[in-house]
Length: 174
Length: 123
Image (cartoon, rainbow over the protein chains, first blue to last red):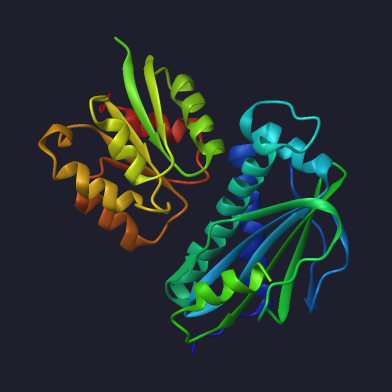
Protein backbone atom coordinates (compact mmCIF):
# COMPACT_ATOMS: atom_id res chain seq x y z
CA UNK A 1 0.00 0.00 0.00
CA UNK A 2 1.30 3.45 -0.93
CA UNK A 3 1.57 5.96 1.89
CA UNK A 4 0.96 9.68 2.06
CA UNK A 5 2.51 11.85 4.74
CA UNK A 6 1.23 15.21 5.91
CA UNK A 7 4.23 17.10 4.61
CA UNK A 8 3.84 15.74 1.09
CA UNK A 9 0.12 16.54 1.04
CA UNK A 10 0.72 20.03 2.45
CA UNK A 11 3.37 20.80 -0.17
CA UNK A 12 1.06 19.59 -2.93
CA UNK A 13 -1.82 21.76 -1.67
CA UNK A 14 0.41 24.83 -1.43
CA UNK A 15 1.93 24.32 -4.88
CA UNK A 16 -1.48 23.85 -6.53
CA UNK A 17 -2.93 26.89 -4.73
CA UNK A 18 -0.04 29.16 -5.63
CA UNK A 19 -0.25 28.01 -9.25
CA UNK A 20 -3.99 28.73 -9.55
CA UNK A 21 -3.74 32.07 -7.74
CA UNK A 22 -0.74 33.13 -9.80
CA UNK A 23 -2.03 32.06 -13.21
CA UNK A 24 -5.77 32.66 -13.00
CA UNK A 25 -6.40 35.20 -10.24
CA UNK A 26 -3.32 37.41 -9.98
CA UNK A 27 -3.94 37.68 -6.23
CA UNK A 28 -1.17 36.80 -3.76
CA UNK A 29 -1.85 33.80 -1.52
CA UNK A 30 0.65 33.62 1.31
CA UNK A 31 0.86 30.29 3.10
CA UNK A 32 0.21 30.41 6.87
CA UNK A 33 1.21 27.73 9.40
CA UNK A 34 -0.67 24.50 8.76
CA UNK A 35 -2.36 22.10 11.14
CA UNK A 36 -3.64 18.55 11.20
CA UNK A 37 -7.18 18.25 12.53
CA UNK A 38 -9.52 15.42 13.41
CA UNK A 39 -13.30 15.37 13.31
CA UNK A 40 -15.90 17.99 12.40
CA UNK A 41 -15.16 21.65 11.83
CA UNK A 42 -16.42 24.48 14.01
CA UNK A 43 -19.61 26.35 12.98
CA UNK A 44 -18.80 28.62 10.08
CA UNK A 45 -20.06 31.69 8.22
CA UNK A 46 -19.23 32.11 4.55
CA UNK A 47 -18.58 29.94 1.51
CA UNK A 48 -17.45 26.32 1.56
CA UNK A 49 -16.72 24.39 -1.61
CA UNK A 50 -16.41 20.61 -1.35
CA UNK A 51 -15.13 17.99 -3.74
CA UNK A 52 -14.74 14.25 -3.26
CA UNK A 53 -11.90 11.85 -4.13
CA UNK A 54 -12.59 8.27 -5.12
CA UNK A 55 -10.53 5.33 -6.24
CA UNK A 56 -7.67 3.57 -4.47
CA UNK A 57 -7.68 6.52 -2.08
CA UNK A 58 -10.86 8.20 -0.93
CA UNK A 59 -11.65 11.43 0.88
CA UNK A 60 -12.47 15.06 0.31
CA UNK A 61 -11.07 18.49 -0.37
CA UNK A 62 -12.63 21.69 0.94
CA UNK A 63 -12.03 25.35 0.33
CA UNK A 64 -13.60 27.89 2.67
CA UNK A 65 -13.50 31.64 3.01
CA UNK A 66 -15.63 34.65 3.88
CA UNK A 67 -18.25 35.92 1.46
CA UNK A 68 -16.10 39.02 0.93
CA UNK A 69 -13.11 36.98 -0.20
CA UNK A 70 -15.29 34.69 -2.34
CA UNK A 71 -16.60 37.78 -4.17
CA UNK A 72 -13.07 39.10 -4.62
CA UNK A 73 -11.68 35.80 -5.94
CA UNK A 74 -14.64 35.37 -8.28
CA UNK A 75 -14.25 38.91 -9.55
CA UNK A 76 -10.58 38.26 -10.29
CA UNK A 77 -11.39 35.01 -12.10
CA UNK A 78 -14.22 36.42 -14.18
CA UNK A 79 -12.92 39.97 -14.62
CA UNK A 80 -16.06 41.35 -12.97
CA UNK A 81 -17.06 42.88 -9.66
CA UNK A 82 -19.36 41.23 -7.15
CA UNK A 83 -20.80 42.92 -4.08
CA UNK A 84 -22.57 39.80 -2.82
CA UNK A 85 -22.57 36.06 -3.33
CA UNK A 86 -24.64 35.13 -6.37
CA UNK A 87 -24.73 32.35 -9.00
CA UNK A 88 -21.56 33.62 -10.68
CA UNK A 89 -19.65 33.63 -7.39
CA UNK A 90 -20.80 30.12 -6.50
CA UNK A 91 -19.82 28.88 -9.96
CA UNK A 92 -16.44 30.61 -9.81
CA UNK A 93 -15.71 29.16 -6.36
CA UNK A 94 -16.61 25.71 -7.68
CA UNK A 95 -14.15 26.15 -10.53
CA UNK A 96 -11.37 27.45 -8.27
CA UNK A 97 -11.90 24.37 -6.10
CA UNK A 98 -11.92 22.11 -9.14
CA UNK A 99 -8.62 23.55 -10.34
CA UNK A 100 -6.83 23.47 -6.97
CA UNK A 101 -8.04 20.09 -5.78
CA UNK A 102 -7.82 18.71 -9.33
CA UNK A 103 -4.16 19.64 -9.43
CA UNK A 104 -3.60 18.13 -5.97
CA UNK A 105 -5.14 14.92 -7.31
CA UNK A 106 -3.04 14.94 -10.48
CA UNK A 107 0.16 15.57 -8.53
CA UNK A 108 -0.57 12.74 -6.08
CA UNK A 109 -1.61 10.18 -8.70
CA UNK A 110 1.98 9.29 -9.60
CA UNK A 111 2.42 7.91 -6.09
CA UNK A 112 -1.09 6.92 -5.09
CA UNK A 113 -2.49 5.66 -8.37
CA UNK A 114 -5.50 6.89 -10.37
CA UNK A 115 -8.26 8.72 -8.52
CA UNK A 116 -11.52 10.30 -9.60
CA UNK A 117 -13.05 13.58 -8.46
CA UNK A 118 -16.69 14.35 -7.85
CA UNK A 119 -18.20 17.56 -9.14
CA UNK A 120 -17.80 20.43 -6.63
CA UNK A 121 -20.61 21.40 -4.27
CA UNK A 122 -20.61 24.99 -3.01
CA UNK A 123 -22.52 26.11 0.09
CA UNK A 124 -23.04 29.69 1.28
CA UNK A 125 -24.64 30.46 4.61
CA UNK A 126 -24.25 31.30 8.27
CA UNK A 127 -23.50 29.22 11.33
CA UNK A 128 -23.31 25.85 9.65
CA UNK A 129 -21.05 22.83 9.95
CA UNK A 130 -19.79 20.61 7.14
CA UNK A 131 -18.91 16.99 7.60
CA UNK A 132 -17.41 14.52 5.15
CA UNK A 133 -18.28 11.05 6.32
CA UNK A 134 -15.31 8.74 6.61
CA UNK A 135 -12.64 11.44 6.64
CA UNK A 136 -10.94 11.12 10.00
CA UNK A 137 -8.01 13.48 9.55
CA UNK A 138 -7.52 16.71 7.61
CA UNK A 139 -4.37 18.49 6.55
CA UNK A 140 -5.39 22.14 6.89
CA UNK A 141 -3.52 24.71 4.81
CA UNK A 142 -4.55 28.32 5.47
CA UNK A 143 -3.53 31.22 3.23
CA UNK A 144 -3.56 34.97 3.67
CA UNK A 145 -5.07 36.74 0.67
CA UNK A 146 -4.56 40.46 1.22
CA UNK A 147 -5.73 40.25 4.82
CA UNK A 148 -8.52 37.72 4.31
CA UNK A 149 -8.13 34.07 5.26
CA UNK A 150 -8.65 31.25 2.80
CA UNK A 151 -8.54 27.73 4.18
CA UNK A 152 -7.92 24.61 2.14
CA UNK A 153 -8.19 21.20 3.77
CA UNK A 154 -7.73 17.76 2.30
CA UNK A 155 -8.40 14.41 3.94
CA UNK A 156 -7.36 11.22 2.15
CA UNK A 157 -7.18 7.60 3.17
CA UNK A 158 -6.64 4.33 1.36
CA UNK A 159 -9.82 2.61 0.27
CA UNK A 160 -10.33 -0.58 -1.67
CA UNK A 161 -14.00 0.05 -2.32
CA UNK A 162 -14.78 0.49 -5.98
CA UNK A 163 -18.08 2.25 -5.24
CA UNK A 164 -16.43 4.96 -3.18
CA UNK A 165 -17.99 7.73 -5.29
CA UNK A 166 -21.46 6.63 -4.25
CA UNK A 167 -20.43 6.40 -0.60
CA UNK A 168 -19.00 9.92 -0.63
CA UNK A 169 -21.91 11.49 -2.47
CA UNK A 170 -24.46 9.92 -0.16
CA UNK A 171 -22.54 10.91 2.94
CA UNK A 172 -22.44 14.56 1.95
CA UNK A 173 -26.19 14.98 1.52
CA UNK A 174 -27.11 13.43 4.86
CA UNK B 1 -12.53 36.61 -41.19
CA UNK B 2 -14.36 35.73 -38.00
CA UNK B 3 -14.27 32.30 -36.41
CA UNK B 4 -17.26 30.46 -34.95
CA UNK B 5 -16.30 28.60 -31.78
CA UNK B 6 -17.86 25.98 -29.52
CA UNK B 7 -16.80 25.97 -25.86
CA UNK B 8 -17.72 22.82 -23.93
CA UNK B 9 -17.40 22.89 -20.13
CA UNK B 10 -19.78 22.22 -17.25
CA UNK B 11 -18.50 25.38 -15.57
CA UNK B 12 -20.05 28.63 -16.78
CA UNK B 13 -17.06 30.41 -15.25
CA UNK B 14 -14.60 28.57 -17.46
CA UNK B 15 -16.74 29.12 -20.57
CA UNK B 16 -16.71 32.84 -19.84
CA UNK B 17 -12.94 32.87 -19.18
CA UNK B 18 -12.15 30.98 -22.38
CA UNK B 19 -14.24 33.38 -24.42
CA UNK B 20 -12.28 36.27 -22.92
CA UNK B 21 -8.96 34.49 -23.50
CA UNK B 22 -9.78 33.92 -27.17
CA UNK B 23 -10.28 37.66 -27.60
CA UNK B 24 -6.98 38.28 -25.78
CA UNK B 25 -5.36 35.79 -28.16
CA UNK B 26 -6.45 38.02 -31.08
CA UNK B 27 -8.99 35.53 -32.37
CA UNK B 28 -11.63 37.36 -34.38
CA UNK B 29 -14.68 35.73 -32.83
CA UNK B 30 -17.85 35.14 -34.77
CA UNK B 31 -20.59 33.17 -33.06
CA UNK B 32 -19.65 31.55 -29.75
CA UNK B 33 -21.69 28.48 -28.86
CA UNK B 34 -21.60 27.04 -25.36
CA UNK B 35 -22.38 23.54 -24.11
CA UNK B 36 -22.43 22.01 -20.61
CA UNK B 37 -21.33 18.56 -21.70
CA UNK B 38 -20.52 16.39 -24.70
CA UNK B 39 -24.12 15.45 -25.39
CA UNK B 40 -25.21 19.08 -25.49
CA UNK B 41 -22.20 19.88 -27.68
CA UNK B 42 -23.25 17.35 -30.30
CA UNK B 43 -26.73 18.89 -30.31
CA UNK B 44 -25.34 22.41 -30.71
CA UNK B 45 -23.15 21.30 -33.61
CA UNK B 46 -26.12 20.05 -35.62
CA UNK B 47 -26.51 22.63 -38.33
CA UNK B 48 -23.94 24.96 -36.73
CA UNK B 49 -20.49 24.21 -38.12
CA UNK B 50 -17.65 25.81 -36.15
CA UNK B 51 -13.99 26.46 -36.86
CA UNK B 52 -12.69 25.64 -33.37
CA UNK B 53 -13.79 23.54 -30.39
CA UNK B 54 -12.44 23.94 -26.85
CA UNK B 55 -13.55 21.14 -24.55
CA UNK B 56 -13.17 20.04 -20.94
CA UNK B 57 -12.74 16.31 -20.24
CA UNK B 58 -14.54 15.66 -16.95
CA UNK B 59 -18.19 16.47 -17.57
CA UNK B 60 -21.51 14.78 -16.79
CA UNK B 61 -23.58 12.84 -19.35
CA UNK B 62 -20.84 12.66 -21.99
CA UNK B 63 -17.24 13.47 -21.17
CA UNK B 64 -14.78 15.26 -23.42
CA UNK B 65 -13.02 12.12 -24.62
CA UNK B 66 -16.27 10.53 -25.75
CA UNK B 67 -17.21 13.79 -27.46
CA UNK B 68 -13.82 13.83 -29.18
CA UNK B 69 -14.24 10.24 -30.40
CA UNK B 70 -17.73 11.04 -31.71
CA UNK B 71 -16.53 14.11 -33.57
CA UNK B 72 -13.51 12.43 -35.15
CA UNK B 73 -15.73 9.57 -36.32
CA UNK B 74 -17.88 12.09 -38.18
CA UNK B 75 -16.39 13.22 -41.47
CA UNK B 76 -17.85 16.71 -41.02
CA UNK B 77 -15.68 17.30 -37.94
CA UNK B 78 -12.48 15.45 -38.82
CA UNK B 79 -10.62 18.64 -39.73
CA UNK B 80 -12.02 20.96 -37.05
CA UNK B 81 -9.31 21.90 -34.50
CA UNK B 82 -10.18 20.57 -31.04
CA UNK B 83 -8.25 21.61 -27.95
CA UNK B 84 -8.84 19.93 -24.61
CA UNK B 85 -8.77 22.32 -21.62
CA UNK B 86 -8.91 20.36 -18.39
CA UNK B 87 -7.63 19.81 -14.86
CA UNK B 88 -6.86 16.20 -15.86
CA UNK B 89 -3.09 16.13 -15.96
CA UNK B 90 -2.31 12.42 -16.07
CA UNK B 91 -0.17 11.21 -18.95
CA UNK B 92 -2.78 8.57 -19.74
CA UNK B 93 -5.49 11.15 -20.34
CA UNK B 94 -3.20 13.36 -22.41
CA UNK B 95 -2.16 10.41 -24.58
CA UNK B 96 -5.73 9.21 -24.89
CA UNK B 97 -6.89 12.65 -26.03
CA UNK B 98 -4.10 12.98 -28.57
CA UNK B 99 -4.69 9.45 -29.88
CA UNK B 100 -8.38 10.24 -30.31
CA UNK B 101 -7.45 13.22 -32.44
CA UNK B 102 -7.18 16.26 -30.18
CA UNK B 103 -5.01 19.00 -31.68
CA UNK B 104 -3.85 20.26 -28.30
CA UNK B 105 -4.10 19.82 -24.56
CA UNK B 106 -4.08 22.65 -22.03
CA UNK B 107 -4.10 21.97 -18.32
CA UNK B 108 -6.08 24.21 -15.96
CA UNK B 109 -4.98 26.60 -14.57
CA UNK B 110 -3.88 28.23 -17.81
CA UNK B 111 -2.73 31.60 -19.09
CA UNK B 112 -3.95 33.40 -22.19
CA UNK B 113 -0.46 32.90 -23.60
CA UNK B 114 -0.75 29.10 -23.33
CA UNK B 115 -4.05 29.11 -25.20
CA UNK B 116 -2.56 31.43 -27.81
CA UNK B 117 0.38 29.05 -28.32
CA UNK B 118 -1.95 26.10 -28.84
CA UNK B 119 -4.01 28.06 -31.35
CA UNK B 120 -0.97 29.03 -33.42
CA UNK B 121 -1.15 27.34 -36.77
CA UNK B 122 -4.61 25.94 -36.08
CA UNK B 123 -6.87 28.92 -36.68
